[in-house]
Length: 514
Ligand SMILES: Cc1cc2nc3c(=O)[nH]c(=O)nc-3n(C[C@H](O)[C@H](O)[C@H](O)COP(=O)(O)OP(=O)(O)OC[C@H]3O[C@@H](n4cnc5c(N)ncnc54)[C@H](O)[C@@H]3O)c2cc1C
Image (cartoon, rainbow, N blue to C red; front, side, top):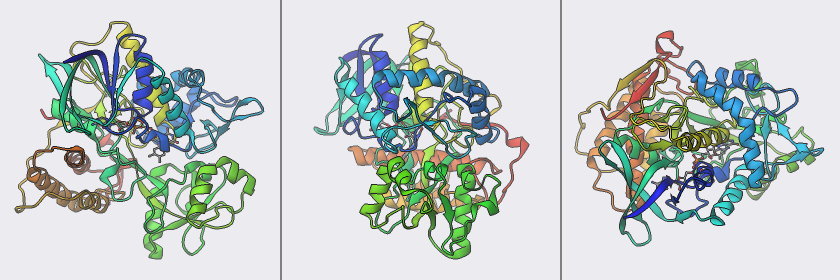
């Protein structure tokens, strides 16, 4: 069995950045299930948040993050995030990420629920692509070993500590085992759970499923962020229309042309994502339409085309000139706030197992992620994993405590009847319809029963699609059960049958195999 100091699963910003730091401390293997650049990171448009502007401060960034998180942010983790963010931006600049500049300084833009312009961007609206390509070039030029088309299928544990990983070579279908001192899961999110999603096809919750199956604790799984504005055109994937379009002055109109956001929130079009997403759902219901529109026609066309070249081109290719016409949009699943529970050093409750990026839950997002806080979270906590390991201070029996927590295991459910395994699209439709932007006890209970029955009906996975389906069903069960347990509405979790926040629920739901 090949032995490494570090095995990192995933090659988005989390995997690549952490690998570049890890190589200074030992041998590194990256396992990734597609090609190195298959990930969500390369689709990130708006940018990356850090308090580097003249009128900004870590304190302001802290306040905005806490406000968006709706009572569930881990205050210590947020403090670390905002204080360490500027230093991590310097790392990216040193790695060669070409951030856009204005008058010789890094340009900053505004996004929803940020109180000042704080978002760095590259290539206008191609920030993620520039970061991914810059980091993957660095990795390829280094001695880091990368195995593409290699799917992690099981975490290996010996005497309570992680000892390695089992993986499927998707090209040859052979199974291999690799051993390591530290295993870092950087597997991204689970947006493929939903029929309408901005996420790439890799986002199938593999890290969450692998960690849960190994006994790791998961937290905040009920909080799934829906982006308010993804392009809604028949037969076209829900391409993201960045919040930054509204940050630059774009406004939302319903099909009747009414500018509706001021009716719902004092912040208008720049209200937090959950508020805008729900307002759009209400407007669509009210007007009997499956879409609303972003109007950017009043902005100088030179601003639109230079700030959003990617969005401009994508819409033009689909017959819409956004400088002259309205862009049809609707909400889509976007970001998994919950995930593998980590402390502020990226440690999980299993010795030797770390998690970073969208698969991890460090506690900085609470019930609702502030726009552009996810890539910066990756850098801050990826760096802290490697600092911890460098100090030789890894915890032997990590306990990860996030304030007031309640612990559950997945409840047993009676399969209603013999049921056959679903297709991916059936699963996605169920989740969209029953575990979506607005849920209630009945819809969630039905989904929970169906998911449990589907899980029982699955044959042993043998290839990438069947492993991914199995992981998504497990992940779906975790999201649905947590959403059932939380009998209130908070942040991205909205229950029509209990539409208000309750102080009793200012606590976290932790799920583990027990
Ligand atoms: C359209 C879009 C726009 C966004 N815009 C922004 C933005 O402007 N700012 C911001 O901060 N955030 C943004 N986000 C969120 C942000 O991009 C992601 O949260 C972040 O990039 C996640 O990085 P990651 O490395 O954790 O995951 P990813 O980039 O998704 O990478 C996950 C990696 O893990 C691999 N993998 C998964 N499972 C396995 C397995 N079993 N075996 C082997 N490999 C596996 C995948 O192939 C992939 O390489 C956006 C997201 C989307 C989808």
